[in-house]
Length: 286
Image 1 (cartoon, rainbow, N blue to C red):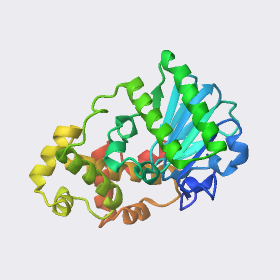
Image 2: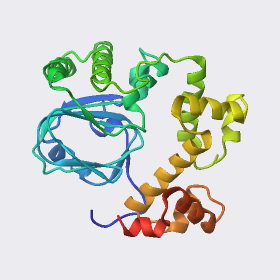
Image 3: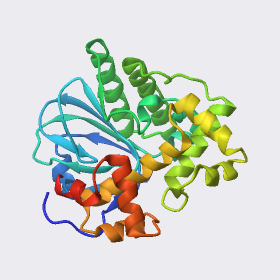
Image 4: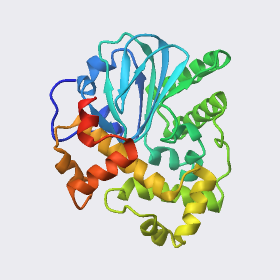
């Protein structure tokens, strides 16, 4: 992977086109030549869907190598650290969009209904054979719209159809669940964790912001996510720690400070308890 640095570049959708900061679409073939900086580890702050039509190469998402093969869609979630094999000969379409782009027409809760967009779901999604032709047609029509008229309203409609088709194709439990007031609390909690995991480590801190009790927050998380609120918080902190250990040259102590731990020993104990290994061992084994 080459030498590491203290920081990881953070990209928004405008890394592809400065004139389109919230949505971009293009063909996968030649993506590495057009954007060579994607070959280095970087954090993406937007959703990406890669429809693989022709095999070749791979993409690394949070140190997991995913080979690009037909009848697959790769879904990259915001906050993931990505590294592209620019020598790969794969082809297909790449759709990049921010949450705000989708939510201008469909509110945030609608986007959260798609279970495959959850960080809990693997990045590689299967595209059933009988869906392949329909998926290709939708992508082609959307790309033509993007290249010619480029109506954002029409692009959002195509995106909504594509997300629904991918949802049906994978049939992930809970994907079509209506967003009730109870589930919405969980969604709000998860968004808050994403924003404050480095400073708020206890469920009580989040429950106070949501104006509910800690016990009720735990009950909701167990009902809709099969995890306690504390487990969700700890998992998010662990993911960020693993990213820093794998992709940066920061010392374990520096990572501990970055993640808001009061001492190095507390961070080491926390990491080992939640992963089974020390931070140094994790780094050596990667």
